[in-house]
Amino acid sequence: MEFDFTPVITYFPTLLQGLGVGLLVALVVAFMSIVGGLLVAVISVYVNKVVSWPLRFFIWLFMTTPLLLQLYFLYFGLGEWILIPAILVGILGLGFHYMAYNADIFIATIKAVSGGQYEASRSLGFGHIATIFYIIVPQALIRSIPQLGNNMILMVKDTSVLSAIGVAELVYASQYAISVTFRPFEFFIVIAVMYYVVNIFMELGQAWLERMTAYRR
Amino acid sequence: MSTENQTDTPDTPMVEIRDVYKRFGDLEVLKGINLTVNRGKIISIIGPSGSGKSTLLRSVNHLEVIEKGSIFLEGVQVNRPDLKGLAFERHINHIRQNMGMVFQHFNLFPHLSTIDNVTLAPRKLKGMEAKAAREWGMELLNRVGLAEKADVFPNWLSGGQKQRVAIARALAMKPKVMLFDEATSALDPELVEEVNLVMRSLAEEHMTMLIVTHEMGFARDVSDWAMFMDGGVVVEECAPQKLFSNPDQERTRNFLKKHLQG
Ligand SMILES: Nc1ncnc2c1ncn2[C@@H]1O[C@H](COP(=O)(O)OP(=O)(O)O)[C@@H](O)[C@H]1O
Ligand SMILES: [Mg+2]
Image 1 (cartoon, rainbow over the protein chains, first blue to last red):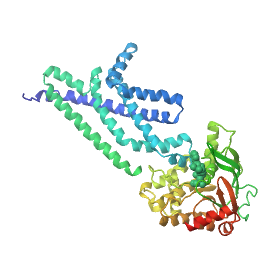
Image 2 (cartoon, each protein chain N blue to C red):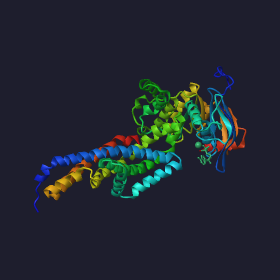
Image 3 (cartoon, chains in turn yellow, red):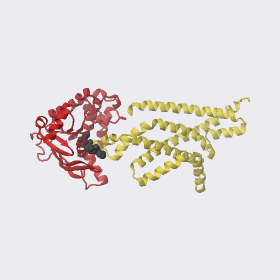
Image 4 (cartoon, chains in turn purple, cyan):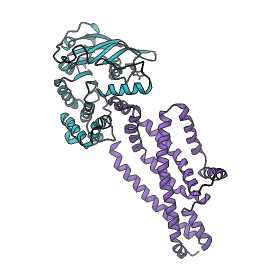
Protein backbone atom coordinates (compact mmCIF):
# COMPACT_ATOMS: atom_id res chain seq x y z
CA MET A 1 0.00 0.00 0.00
CA GLU A 2 1.30 3.40 -0.93
CA PHE A 3 0.78 6.50 1.12
CA ASP A 4 -0.21 9.69 -0.58
CA PHE A 5 -0.44 12.72 1.67
CA THR A 6 -1.33 15.29 -0.97
CA PRO A 7 -5.10 15.08 -0.19
CA VAL A 8 -4.26 15.75 3.44
CA ILE A 9 -2.40 18.87 2.41
CA THR A 10 -5.32 19.98 0.29
CA TYR A 11 -7.72 19.53 3.16
CA PHE A 12 -5.32 20.71 5.86
CA PRO A 13 -7.20 23.99 6.40
CA THR A 14 -10.36 21.95 7.03
CA LEU A 15 -8.50 19.82 9.56
CA LEU A 16 -7.09 22.89 11.28
CA GLN A 17 -10.57 24.32 11.48
CA GLY A 18 -11.77 21.05 13.02
CA LEU A 19 -8.90 21.14 15.49
CA GLY A 20 -9.83 24.73 16.35
CA VAL A 21 -13.45 23.78 17.00
CA GLY A 22 -12.34 20.83 19.15
CA LEU A 23 -9.96 22.98 21.19
CA LEU A 24 -12.56 25.69 21.64
CA VAL A 25 -15.05 23.13 22.91
CA ALA A 26 -12.34 21.70 25.18
CA LEU A 27 -11.60 25.14 26.62
CA VAL A 28 -15.22 25.84 27.46
CA VAL A 29 -15.69 22.33 28.83
CA ALA A 30 -12.53 22.66 30.96
CA PHE A 31 -13.84 25.87 32.48
CA MET A 32 -17.33 24.49 33.01
CA SER A 33 -16.21 21.15 34.43
CA ILE A 34 -13.64 22.65 36.81
CA VAL A 35 -15.78 25.46 38.17
CA GLY A 36 -18.89 23.29 38.21
CA GLY A 37 -17.04 20.30 39.66
CA LEU A 38 -15.65 22.46 42.44
CA LEU A 39 -19.10 23.82 43.23
CA VAL A 40 -20.62 20.34 43.25
CA ALA A 41 -17.81 19.07 45.48
CA VAL A 42 -18.02 21.94 47.97
CA ILE A 43 -21.77 21.60 48.23
CA SER A 44 -21.72 17.84 48.56
CA VAL A 45 -19.03 17.98 51.26
CA TYR A 46 -20.38 20.89 53.27
CA VAL A 47 -24.11 21.11 52.75
CA ASN A 48 -26.68 18.80 54.31
CA LYS A 49 -27.70 15.44 52.88
CA VAL A 50 -30.88 16.71 51.26
CA VAL A 51 -28.77 18.75 48.86
CA SER A 52 -25.68 16.58 48.65
CA TRP A 53 -27.43 13.28 47.96
CA PRO A 54 -28.84 14.28 44.55
CA LEU A 55 -25.44 15.69 43.66
CA ARG A 56 -23.71 12.43 44.52
CA PHE A 57 -26.31 10.63 42.46
CA PHE A 58 -25.51 12.95 39.54
CA ILE A 59 -21.81 12.18 39.89
CA TRP A 60 -22.48 8.47 40.09
CA LEU A 61 -24.78 8.53 37.07
CA PHE A 62 -22.33 10.37 34.83
CA MET A 63 -19.40 8.25 35.92
CA THR A 64 -21.11 4.91 35.33
CA THR A 65 -22.62 5.46 31.87
CA PRO A 66 -20.86 5.94 28.54
CA LEU A 67 -20.20 9.47 27.32
CA LEU A 68 -21.67 8.65 23.92
CA LEU A 69 -24.91 7.52 25.47
CA GLN A 70 -25.08 10.70 27.54
CA LEU A 71 -24.59 12.75 24.39
CA TYR A 72 -27.36 10.87 22.57
CA PHE A 73 -29.68 11.37 25.51
CA LEU A 74 -29.00 15.08 25.51
CA TYR A 75 -29.04 15.50 21.74
CA PHE A 76 -32.13 13.49 20.92
CA GLY A 77 -33.81 14.09 24.27
CA LEU A 78 -33.43 17.84 24.17
CA GLY A 79 -34.09 17.79 20.44
CA GLU A 80 -37.63 16.67 21.19
CA TRP A 81 -38.30 19.95 22.92
CA ILE A 82 -36.03 22.64 21.64
CA LEU A 83 -33.71 23.20 18.77
CA ILE A 84 -30.19 23.71 20.05
CA PRO A 85 -27.00 23.55 18.02
CA ALA A 86 -25.03 20.32 18.23
CA ILE A 87 -21.97 22.16 19.50
CA LEU A 88 -23.92 23.41 22.51
CA VAL A 89 -25.21 19.93 23.24
CA GLY A 90 -21.64 18.66 22.94
CA ILE A 91 -20.35 21.25 25.36
CA LEU A 92 -23.10 20.50 27.86
CA GLY A 93 -22.71 16.74 27.57
CA LEU A 94 -18.94 16.71 27.81
CA GLY A 95 -19.14 19.43 30.47
CA PHE A 96 -21.46 17.47 32.75
CA HIS A 97 -19.54 14.26 32.17
CA TYR A 98 -16.23 15.76 33.25
CA MET A 99 -17.87 17.88 35.91
CA ALA A 100 -18.78 14.60 37.61
CA TYR A 101 -15.24 13.26 37.30
CA ASN A 102 -13.71 16.50 38.56
CA ALA A 103 -16.17 16.74 41.45
CA ASP A 104 -15.11 13.24 42.46
CA ILE A 105 -11.49 14.41 42.65
CA PHE A 106 -12.32 17.65 44.47
CA ILE A 107 -14.38 15.82 47.09
CA ALA A 108 -11.34 13.69 47.93
CA THR A 109 -8.86 16.58 48.00
CA ILE A 110 -11.17 18.84 50.02
CA LYS A 111 -11.49 16.09 52.60
CA ALA A 112 -7.71 15.66 52.59
CA VAL A 113 -7.09 19.22 53.80
CA SER A 114 -6.51 18.77 57.53
CA GLY A 115 -9.01 19.88 60.11
CA GLY A 116 -6.27 21.98 61.64
CA GLN A 117 -6.38 24.28 58.61
CA TYR A 118 -10.08 24.88 59.13
CA GLU A 119 -9.61 25.53 62.83
CA ALA A 120 -6.67 27.88 62.32
CA SER A 121 -8.73 29.96 59.92
CA ARG A 122 -11.78 30.01 62.17
CA SER A 123 -9.62 30.96 65.14
CA LEU A 124 -8.49 34.06 63.23
CA GLY A 125 -12.13 35.09 62.91
CA PHE A 126 -12.90 33.88 59.38
CA GLY A 127 -16.40 32.50 58.94
CA HIS A 128 -17.27 29.05 57.63
CA ILE A 129 -17.71 30.13 54.02
CA ALA A 130 -14.70 32.48 54.01
CA THR A 131 -12.60 29.60 55.36
CA ILE A 132 -13.74 27.29 52.58
CA PHE A 133 -13.04 30.00 50.00
CA TYR A 134 -9.66 31.29 51.19
CA ILE A 135 -8.16 28.24 52.88
CA ILE A 136 -9.74 24.92 51.94
CA VAL A 137 -10.51 25.31 48.23
CA PRO A 138 -7.12 26.75 47.18
CA GLN A 139 -5.32 23.91 48.94
CA ALA A 140 -7.69 21.33 47.45
CA LEU A 141 -7.13 22.80 43.99
CA ILE A 142 -3.37 22.53 44.35
CA ARG A 143 -3.65 18.93 45.47
CA SER A 144 -5.98 18.19 42.55
CA ILE A 145 -3.64 19.31 39.76
CA PRO A 146 -2.19 15.87 38.85
CA GLN A 147 -5.53 14.07 38.58
CA LEU A 148 -7.27 17.10 37.16
CA GLY A 149 -4.63 17.33 34.45
CA ASN A 150 -5.16 13.67 33.56
CA ASN A 151 -8.90 14.22 33.33
CA MET A 152 -8.49 17.22 31.07
CA ILE A 153 -6.16 15.30 28.78
CA LEU A 154 -8.77 12.55 28.49
CA MET A 155 -11.41 15.20 27.90
CA VAL A 156 -9.55 16.72 24.96
CA LYS A 157 -9.38 13.31 23.31
CA ASP A 158 -13.06 12.78 24.08
CA THR A 159 -14.04 15.84 22.05
CA SER A 160 -13.71 13.39 19.12
CA VAL A 161 -16.84 11.62 20.37
CA LEU A 162 -18.82 14.77 19.54
CA SER A 163 -18.42 13.86 15.86
CA ALA A 164 -21.23 11.36 16.51
CA ILE A 165 -23.73 14.17 16.99
CA GLY A 166 -22.32 16.24 14.14
CA VAL A 167 -20.04 18.71 15.88
CA ALA A 168 -17.49 19.82 13.28
CA GLU A 169 -14.41 18.99 15.31
CA LEU A 170 -11.27 17.26 14.04
CA VAL A 171 -12.60 13.74 13.49
CA TYR A 172 -15.78 15.01 11.90
CA ALA A 173 -13.79 17.29 9.60
CA SER A 174 -11.59 14.39 8.54
CA GLN A 175 -14.61 12.17 7.88
CA TYR A 176 -15.80 14.64 5.30
CA ALA A 177 -12.36 14.86 3.69
CA ILE A 178 -12.02 11.07 3.68
CA SER A 179 -15.40 10.61 2.04
CA VAL A 180 -14.24 12.83 -0.81
CA THR A 181 -10.64 11.64 -1.16
CA PHE A 182 -10.81 7.94 -0.15
CA ARG A 183 -7.56 8.29 1.79
CA PRO A 184 -8.57 7.26 5.37
CA PHE A 185 -5.16 6.12 6.70
CA GLU A 186 -3.34 9.28 5.71
CA PHE A 187 -5.94 11.36 7.48
CA PHE A 188 -6.02 9.09 10.53
CA ILE A 189 -2.25 9.29 10.85
CA VAL A 190 -2.22 13.07 10.60
CA ILE A 191 -5.05 13.67 13.09
CA ALA A 192 -3.47 11.16 15.49
CA VAL A 193 -0.31 13.25 15.35
CA MET A 194 -2.36 16.38 15.95
CA TYR A 195 -3.97 14.90 19.09
CA TYR A 196 -0.53 13.72 20.17
CA VAL A 197 0.96 17.20 19.87
CA VAL A 198 -1.92 18.74 21.83
CA ASN A 199 -1.37 16.03 24.44
CA ILE A 200 2.30 16.88 24.77
CA PHE A 201 1.52 20.54 25.36
CA MET A 202 -1.05 19.65 27.98
CA GLU A 203 1.36 17.35 29.78
CA LEU A 204 3.99 20.07 29.76
CA GLY A 205 1.45 22.49 31.17
CA GLN A 206 0.45 20.05 33.86
CA ALA A 207 4.06 19.38 34.83
CA TRP A 208 4.71 23.12 34.97
CA LEU A 209 1.69 23.70 37.21
CA GLU A 210 2.80 20.89 39.49
CA ARG A 211 6.27 22.37 39.74
CA MET A 212 4.90 25.83 40.43
CA THR A 213 2.74 24.58 43.28
CA ALA A 214 4.86 21.78 44.75
CA TYR A 215 6.16 23.95 47.60
CA ARG A 216 2.69 25.22 48.39
CA ARG A 217 1.34 21.87 49.49
CA MET B 1 -1.82 39.91 92.00
CA SER B 2 -1.08 43.51 91.12
CA THR B 3 -3.67 45.73 89.54
CA GLU B 4 -1.41 48.08 87.62
CA ASN B 5 -2.78 47.10 84.21
CA GLN B 6 -6.39 47.14 85.16
CA THR B 7 -6.98 50.85 85.52
CA ASP B 8 -9.32 51.36 82.56
CA THR B 9 -11.84 48.67 83.37
CA PRO B 10 -10.93 47.65 86.87
CA ASP B 11 -13.83 45.29 87.38
CA THR B 12 -13.80 43.36 84.14
CA PRO B 13 -11.44 40.42 83.85
CA MET B 14 -10.05 39.72 80.38
CA VAL B 15 -11.22 36.13 80.37
CA GLU B 16 -13.60 34.52 82.74
CA ILE B 17 -14.38 30.81 82.78
CA ARG B 18 -17.32 29.93 84.98
CA ASP B 19 -18.31 26.41 85.95
CA VAL B 20 -17.55 24.93 82.55
CA TYR B 21 -18.53 21.36 81.69
CA LYS B 22 -17.69 19.45 78.54
CA ARG B 23 -18.10 15.83 77.54
CA PHE B 24 -17.28 13.78 74.46
CA GLY B 25 -19.96 11.12 74.37
CA ASP B 26 -19.71 9.31 77.68
CA LEU B 27 -16.37 10.83 78.53
CA GLU B 28 -16.58 13.80 80.85
CA VAL B 29 -13.57 15.93 80.01
CA LEU B 30 -14.23 19.18 81.89
CA LYS B 31 -16.05 18.94 85.19
CA GLY B 32 -16.78 22.40 86.44
CA ILE B 33 -13.78 24.57 85.64
CA ASN B 34 -13.47 28.11 86.97
CA LEU B 35 -10.73 30.56 86.09
CA THR B 36 -10.36 34.32 85.97
CA VAL B 37 -7.65 35.89 83.87
CA ASN B 38 -7.05 39.55 84.52
CA ARG B 39 -5.75 41.96 81.93
CA GLY B 40 -2.05 41.55 81.23
CA LYS B 41 -1.74 38.37 83.26
CA ILE B 42 -0.18 35.12 82.17
CA ILE B 43 -1.71 31.86 83.33
CA SER B 44 -0.03 28.52 82.79
CA ILE B 45 -2.04 25.33 82.73
CA ILE B 46 -0.21 22.08 83.36
CA GLY B 47 -1.37 18.52 83.84
CA PRO B 48 -1.03 14.99 82.50
CA SER B 49 -1.99 14.16 78.93
CA GLY B 50 -5.73 13.70 78.58
CA SER B 51 -6.58 15.86 81.59
CA GLY B 52 -8.59 18.31 79.47
CA LYS B 53 -6.11 21.18 79.04
CA SER B 54 -6.55 21.50 75.27
CA THR B 55 -10.29 21.11 75.55
CA LEU B 56 -10.41 23.94 78.08
CA LEU B 57 -8.29 26.24 75.93
CA ARG B 58 -10.29 25.41 72.81
CA SER B 59 -13.50 26.07 74.69
CA VAL B 60 -12.34 29.61 75.37
CA ASN B 61 -12.58 30.49 71.67
CA HIS B 62 -15.41 28.05 71.04
CA LEU B 63 -13.50 25.53 68.97
CA GLU B 64 -15.12 23.18 71.44
CA VAL B 65 -18.75 23.77 72.33
CA ILE B 66 -19.23 23.54 76.08
CA GLU B 67 -22.28 21.88 77.59
CA LYS B 68 -22.70 23.95 80.69
CA GLY B 69 -21.25 27.08 82.19
CA SER B 70 -20.12 30.28 80.57
CA ILE B 71 -17.04 31.95 79.20
CA PHE B 72 -16.54 35.69 78.93
CA LEU B 73 -14.09 37.86 77.04
CA GLU B 74 -13.97 41.30 78.65
CA GLY B 75 -17.43 40.78 80.02
CA VAL B 76 -18.88 39.64 76.70
CA GLN B 77 -20.19 36.10 76.75
CA VAL B 78 -18.39 33.86 74.24
CA ASN B 79 -20.75 30.88 74.28
CA ARG B 80 -24.22 32.11 73.53
CA PRO B 81 -26.70 29.24 73.48
CA ASP B 82 -29.40 31.81 72.71
CA LEU B 83 -27.84 32.80 69.36
CA LYS B 84 -28.41 30.52 66.39
CA GLY B 85 -27.13 30.15 62.86
CA LEU B 86 -25.70 33.23 61.19
CA ALA B 87 -26.28 35.44 64.21
CA PHE B 88 -24.03 33.20 66.28
CA GLU B 89 -21.48 32.96 63.48
CA ARG B 90 -21.19 36.75 63.29
CA HIS B 91 -20.86 36.91 67.06
CA ILE B 92 -18.18 34.24 67.31
CA ASN B 93 -16.20 35.59 64.36
CA HIS B 94 -16.05 38.93 66.09
CA ILE B 95 -15.01 37.37 69.40
CA ARG B 96 -12.32 35.26 67.73
CA GLN B 97 -10.81 38.29 66.05
CA ASN B 98 -9.93 39.41 69.55
CA MET B 99 -8.24 36.14 70.52
CA GLY B 100 -5.07 34.75 69.01
CA MET B 101 -4.58 31.00 69.06
CA VAL B 102 -1.33 29.11 68.60
CA PHE B 103 -1.53 25.38 67.92
CA GLN B 104 0.88 22.57 68.71
CA HIS B 105 1.18 21.69 65.02
CA PHE B 106 1.36 25.32 63.78
CA ASN B 107 -1.36 24.93 61.15
CA LEU B 108 0.20 27.52 58.89
CA PHE B 109 -1.51 27.87 55.51
CA PRO B 110 0.84 26.04 53.13
CA HIS B 111 -0.51 27.71 49.99
CA LEU B 112 0.34 31.20 51.23
CA SER B 113 3.72 32.83 51.70
CA THR B 114 4.83 33.66 55.21
CA ILE B 115 3.76 37.29 54.92
CA ASP B 116 0.41 36.33 53.42
CA ASN B 117 -0.17 33.92 56.28
CA VAL B 118 0.27 36.88 58.61
CA THR B 119 -1.69 39.47 56.63
CA LEU B 120 -4.60 37.42 55.27
CA ALA B 121 -6.83 38.10 58.28
CA PRO B 122 -6.24 41.88 58.54
CA ARG B 123 -6.66 42.24 54.77
CA LYS B 124 -9.84 40.23 54.43
CA LEU B 125 -11.44 40.84 57.80
CA LYS B 126 -10.43 44.44 58.45
CA GLY B 127 -10.10 45.55 54.84
CA MET B 128 -6.51 46.65 55.33
CA GLU B 129 -4.89 47.92 52.11
CA ALA B 130 -2.23 45.70 50.55
CA LYS B 131 0.59 48.17 51.23
CA ALA B 132 -0.38 48.88 54.82
CA ALA B 133 -0.90 45.15 55.39
CA ARG B 134 2.57 44.37 54.10
CA GLU B 135 4.11 46.95 56.42
CA TRP B 136 2.15 45.59 59.34
CA GLY B 137 3.08 42.03 58.39
CA MET B 138 6.76 42.96 58.14
CA GLU B 139 6.60 44.62 61.54
CA LEU B 140 5.18 41.43 63.04
CA LEU B 141 7.66 39.18 61.23
CA ASN B 142 10.42 41.44 62.45
CA ARG B 143 9.15 41.01 65.95
CA VAL B 144 9.47 37.23 65.74
CA GLY B 145 12.84 37.59 63.96
CA LEU B 146 11.72 36.35 60.55
CA ALA B 147 11.52 39.44 58.35
CA GLU B 148 13.90 37.87 55.84
CA LYS B 149 11.50 34.91 55.40
CA ALA B 150 8.55 37.07 54.36
CA ASP B 151 8.23 35.69 50.85
CA VAL B 152 9.12 32.10 51.65
CA PHE B 153 6.48 29.39 51.89
CA PRO B 154 5.85 27.57 55.19
CA ASN B 155 7.18 24.26 53.88
CA TRP B 156 10.62 25.79 53.64
CA LEU B 157 10.71 26.80 57.31
CA SER B 158 11.95 24.86 60.33
CA GLY B 159 9.48 23.94 63.05
CA GLY B 160 10.62 26.77 65.27
CA GLN B 161 10.32 29.26 62.42
CA LYS B 162 6.85 27.95 61.58
CA GLN B 163 5.69 28.45 65.13
CA ARG B 164 7.09 31.98 65.22
CA VAL B 165 5.19 32.78 62.02
CA ALA B 166 2.08 31.26 63.58
CA ILE B 167 2.50 33.59 66.55
CA ALA B 168 2.90 36.58 64.21
CA ARG B 169 -0.23 35.47 62.36
CA ALA B 170 -2.17 35.26 65.61
CA LEU B 171 -0.95 38.74 66.60
CA ALA B 172 -1.97 40.29 63.29
CA MET B 173 -5.52 41.01 64.40
CA LYS B 174 -4.22 42.74 67.56
CA PRO B 175 -5.83 40.22 69.90
CA LYS B 176 -6.64 41.01 73.51
CA VAL B 177 -5.61 37.57 74.65
CA MET B 178 -3.35 34.85 73.27
CA LEU B 179 -4.02 31.14 73.72
CA PHE B 180 -1.07 28.76 73.41
CA ASP B 181 -1.74 25.01 73.23
CA GLU B 182 1.60 23.28 73.76
CA ALA B 183 3.27 25.62 71.31
CA THR B 184 6.66 23.95 71.69
CA SER B 185 5.70 20.29 72.17
CA ALA B 186 6.10 19.35 68.52
CA LEU B 187 9.52 20.99 68.21
CA ASP B 188 12.98 19.49 68.31
CA PRO B 189 14.56 20.44 71.65
CA GLU B 190 17.04 22.84 70.07
CA LEU B 191 14.19 24.84 68.48
CA VAL B 192 12.19 25.34 71.64
CA GLU B 193 14.11 28.31 72.94
CA GLU B 194 13.52 30.58 69.92
CA VAL B 195 9.76 30.18 70.39
CA ASN B 196 10.02 30.67 74.14
CA LEU B 197 11.92 33.89 73.51
CA VAL B 198 9.08 35.26 71.42
CA MET B 199 6.57 34.28 74.10
CA ARG B 200 8.72 35.96 76.75
CA SER B 201 8.79 39.16 74.71
CA LEU B 202 4.98 39.09 74.61
CA ALA B 203 4.98 38.64 78.36
CA GLU B 204 7.16 41.72 78.73
CA GLU B 205 4.62 43.67 76.71
CA HIS B 206 1.91 42.54 79.12
CA MET B 207 -0.03 40.49 76.62
CA THR B 208 -2.72 38.51 78.40
CA MET B 209 -1.91 34.85 77.84
CA LEU B 210 -3.29 31.43 78.61
CA ILE B 211 -0.53 28.89 78.15
CA VAL B 212 -0.92 25.13 78.14
CA THR B 213 2.58 23.72 78.42
CA HIS B 214 4.75 20.81 79.43
CA GLU B 215 7.70 23.03 80.14
CA MET B 216 7.72 23.53 83.85
CA GLY B 217 10.73 25.84 83.92
CA PHE B 218 9.27 28.17 81.34
CA ALA B 219 5.86 28.18 83.02
CA ARG B 220 7.44 28.99 86.34
CA ASP B 221 9.44 31.86 84.85
CA VAL B 222 6.83 33.67 82.82
CA SER B 223 3.50 33.11 84.47
CA ASP B 224 1.67 35.09 87.13
CA TRP B 225 -0.53 32.17 88.05
CA ALA B 226 -0.30 28.43 87.52
CA MET B 227 -2.98 25.80 87.43
CA PHE B 228 -2.67 22.03 87.69
CA MET B 229 -5.45 20.04 86.03
CA ASP B 230 -6.14 16.34 86.24
CA GLY B 231 -9.16 14.32 85.19
CA GLY B 232 -11.12 17.37 84.09
CA VAL B 233 -10.86 19.30 87.34
CA VAL B 234 -8.53 21.95 88.68
CA VAL B 235 -6.58 20.15 91.36
CA GLU B 236 -4.60 23.13 92.52
CA GLU B 237 -3.89 26.70 91.46
CA CYS B 238 -1.59 29.26 92.98
CA ALA B 239 1.46 31.40 92.28
CA PRO B 240 3.89 29.44 90.10
CA GLN B 241 6.71 29.66 92.64
CA LYS B 242 4.56 27.75 95.06
CA LEU B 243 2.99 25.32 92.61
CA PHE B 244 6.30 24.17 91.20
CA SER B 245 8.26 23.94 94.44
CA ASN B 246 5.82 23.43 97.24
CA PRO B 247 2.37 22.35 96.07
CA ASP B 248 -0.33 21.49 98.58
CA GLN B 249 -1.82 18.52 96.76
CA GLU B 250 -0.40 15.03 96.60
CA ARG B 251 -1.50 14.66 92.94
CA THR B 252 0.38 17.79 91.97
CA ARG B 253 3.52 16.57 93.73
CA ASN B 254 3.33 13.19 91.99
CA PHE B 255 2.86 14.79 88.60
CA LEU B 256 5.78 17.16 89.09
CA LYS B 257 7.99 14.37 90.42
CA LYS B 258 7.31 12.27 87.33
CA HIS B 259 7.80 15.22 85.06
CA LEU B 260 11.03 16.44 86.52
CA GLN B 261 12.47 12.93 86.32
CA GLY B 262 11.50 12.92 82.64
N1 LIG C 1 -12.94 15.56 69.63
C1 LIG C 1 -12.84 14.62 70.60
N2 LIG C 1 -13.65 13.54 70.59
C2 LIG C 1 -13.58 12.62 71.56
N3 LIG C 1 -12.75 12.69 72.61
C3 LIG C 1 -11.92 13.73 72.70
C4 LIG C 1 -11.92 14.76 71.69
N4 LIG C 1 -10.98 15.68 72.02
C5 LIG C 1 -10.43 15.25 73.18
N5 LIG C 1 -10.99 14.08 73.59
C6 LIG C 1 -10.66 13.34 74.80
O1 LIG C 1 -10.81 14.24 75.89
C7 LIG C 1 -9.81 14.04 76.85
C8 LIG C 1 -9.08 15.34 77.11
O2 LIG C 1 -8.36 15.68 75.95
P1 LIG C 1 -7.46 16.98 75.87
O3 LIG C 1 -8.26 18.16 76.30
O4 LIG C 1 -6.88 16.99 74.52
O5 LIG C 1 -6.36 16.68 76.97
P2 LIG C 1 -4.94 17.32 77.15
O6 LIG C 1 -4.81 18.50 76.25
O7 LIG C 1 -4.88 17.69 78.59
O8 LIG C 1 -3.94 16.25 76.84
C9 LIG C 1 -8.92 12.93 76.33
O9 LIG C 1 -9.32 11.72 76.92
C10 LIG C 1 -9.22 12.92 74.85
O10 LIG C 1 -9.04 11.64 74.32
MG1 LIG D 1 -3.49 18.82 74.64
